[in-house]
Image (cartoon, rainbow over all chains, first blue to last red; front, side, top):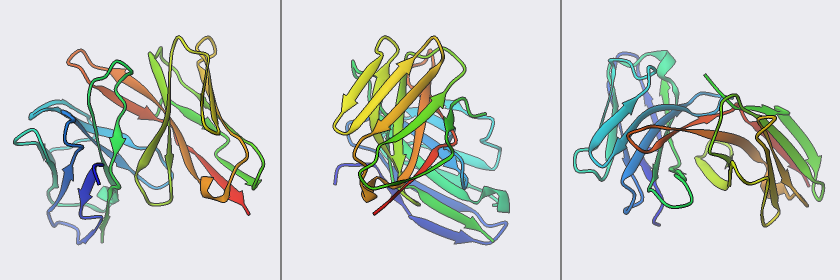
Length: 115
Length: 114
């Protein structure tokens, strides 16, 4: 399977706990994105990496959120002191520049439930 | 905020019928993309149409783009039960640093009844 993978697929945690998600992009893709999707809504952009550099962050990414991509390959998204409002699907996508545009390929997502 | 708005929010049809979904957006774009999402799963890229294209086909999919009206439509012909999913349009905001942020609409939930 050469697609984007995410781990875990589901995470249930109690309010106040920290959680970390992992994303493994398509191997030749240097661009990596995180999005968040709540029920009945489309995904919303959180942050963007080009190689190991975090170039863009959304205002949605509060101080409790941190993302890394240390070697320009996999990425982690950590949420500290989780709140019930953090319950959502967290989606990772990767892409690479082509002449046809920046098509982003999404992983299956990590569904977070904060109790 | 969501730039794209899909219409209708929900659509229920019988297998074999055609399904049409519409999307409107607000700012100028260089392309528009359609994605499908099966329940509780990730998004699958369906088709990309550039701003200088008016129509594009891929298998049973037909996408149109009207930049003067800032709207796009997705037509699925001869629908199948397996087409049951949520469909999203997405428009990219391109950064100077390269890469682009996709802005999604709220989606159309399509149900194809056998």
